[in-house]
Length: 147
Ligand code: DQA
Image 1: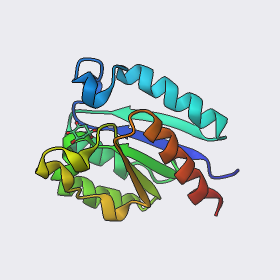
Image 2: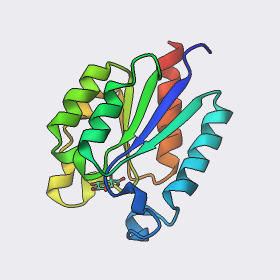
Image 3: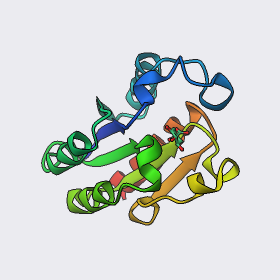
């Protein structure tokens, strides 16, 4: 597969996994989660790079830099998902196939979590499946890249 580079982007507070409510987010730290994603990606013939920040502008600028560096984006922007229009604009500028992932089931929590400003830009979204959701997202992106 020629196009196989997936950028995995985590947003605000995802660096605190392991300390956050395990009933919602599981018990893996971000590093452990990333190791698992990298292993799943390898099995699927995909290359991964990882990025996390708590600063919205850094997230935006990272998306600006995707040109030529990644073939697809898997992103969990955390709470920014629900209101950060600048991240939506930057994802549109990146113009790559993207999948939105959430560890928790955002459809069945507070009302404000049901809204996503990026969902219609993404080829798919996965929510409430914990770390397994990332594998689903990788499989979906793989399909996108071979077709
Ligand atoms: C989250 C869901 C968001 O609503 C929340 O703000 C997060 C994590 C998830 O992975 O379930 O920080 O994106």
